[in-house]
Length: 172
Image 1 (cartoon, helix red, strand yellow):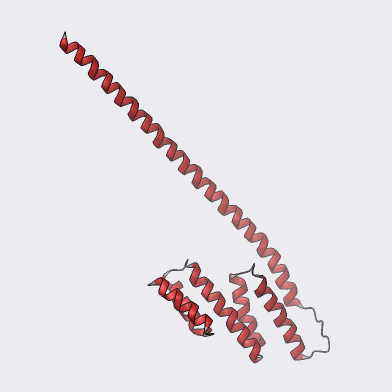
Image 2: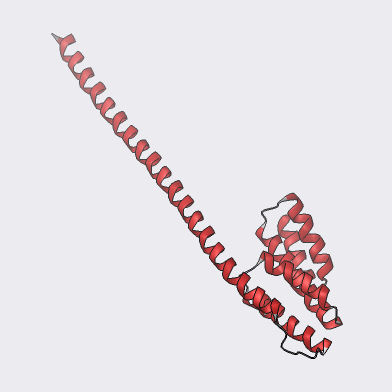
């Protein structure tokens, strides 16, 4: 059933029905918050809605949607470029007397990107440490299982030897 929802979400994205794709993704995430495919559909829907709003000249709304997508997917270069282009379009559209105003959004995106990259690297380190610990624990448990197997084998040998000794004693 879930795969059908994901397929439907992809169809909605392909047919540029971004609002419906957003609703569907949020619905899936409501029942399964860690569903990465639904997260991807949601992010793609926000990107699509941001691009559409930009075409309409609704730069603030476009910035909101693309900002949401960037928060979910901070390492995506395309979203960063969309935000930068949006800032440039917005500045040109306003025809401000200072065409190269601070470009604060571009600088913020760059700074955020560096911070997010550092954060992502640190999160990956933590995840790797967690996996390493889990693997070490699993290896130790597996080793314990092997030691139990050896114990059972030795116990079996002792039983066979004792049985042999009792057999010889009973013959006497």
